[in-house]
Length: 212
Image (tube, rainbow, N blue to C red; front, side):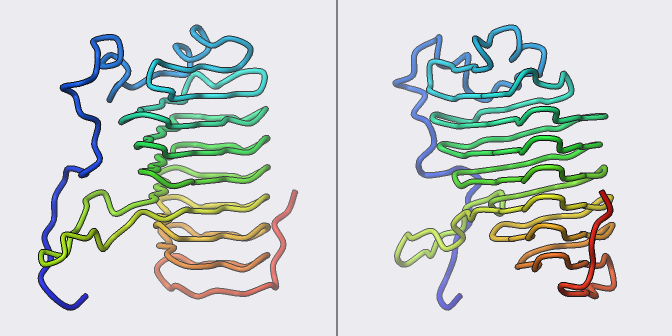
């Protein structure tokens, strides 16, 4: 990027705490466990006073943790999602996270700042998985004041296997039937039925099939 830039850890559109009531403050930046969500939900739906919503089919695993950082966030957990250790979901203002049915997770962290992160049906996520829809900090052009690292959606199709310690960065698209190897760093598009290797970064496009 040409020109000077500046970085901040605070979003310009963060919630104005001066105008938020005490009941709403209780909903901001608080981690909800799967057990708490299930207890407070009605007909598979939890919603707080800041219009943050969690929907789940039949049940939500106790190992799920959801942290809302503002208003209008949305999380959907499909039916028969299994979590072995922990699934931590971090949602910013208007962020969305969709997890399809029959997906299994050992340990993963998903961060949707303002965009959408979607994981399809029948996926397998190992441990140490990190899926990020943003860079974590906002970077601005000093002259124009315009942010130059906007968050981007992440899409993971159906029947995808993600290996241990893999990192999926903003703007990534992993199409159905593909495999992401251990320690892989994904920042682009992986076609259907392909393999993205770990440290070698080798890929086999359209030639592989993940066993049922």
